[in-house]
View: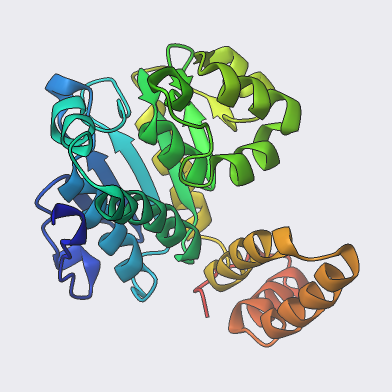
Amino acid sequence: MAPLETYAITLPVRDYTPRHFLLEVDGKTATITLNRPDRKNPLTFQSYAELRDLFRALQFDTEVKTIVITGAGGNFCSGGDVFEIIEPLLSRDMPGLLQFTTMTGELVKAMRACPQPIVAAIDGICVGAGAIIAMASDLRVGTTGAKVAFLFNRVGLAGCDMGACAILPRIIGQGRASELLYTGRVMSGEEAERWGFFNRLADAGSVLSEARKLADSLSAGPTFANAMTKRMLHMEWDMSVDQAIEAEAMAQAVCMKTEDYTRAFNAFAAKQKPVFEGN
């Protein structure tokens, strides 16, 4: 079945040519572009699987330090393709449906597990699974013209798709997440920024460059420590405050043994700006 497709992605990722989207590695930043602009960049069984496998591979890529994900043609992503995903699912049995829903969830798991911070550059339509990909990113740069919607209940499904009920409330709060997931309504770009879903707004013509600028600034930082921050942000969802404090004590002690920590002290002592190398 299509959802069981896998893609052999060898390292370094910069040498991989995807079949179902675009990938560019510039310096330490990888940019993934969903590239079906004539349809507002919908996902297919194959693009879901290839994205999942790419993010899994990125866990082990030592060259890429940050990731940008965006869409071509002025839109981010219109969700699952109506005729290539939605319609075929109508004829699947329960095991086949569970294969699909498990695979889509694995994409979010892979995004959260890869150590590199992910910056989403969002313009235009960002709905359904597209909104989930934006949500699963670490940071989001949007435009006033962006339209974000978790549409699942509008097609007769629960709003709890691909981790939405766990992740979205942690970004914008329980009440606001409940409203979006129960109603499936569109959240405007200004509202998304005001509610904290977008970290910042940019003009449509510069949203990708602003996202890359943010990603590059993270790539120039202490990338081992950034990866540790991402891991702790994810792990501490399931911890008590006391457990989180203990886990952070261990994480910080590990970071204190990095060369970047020593570089930071030496630069401070010399009244210079530290140049981090990620080790």
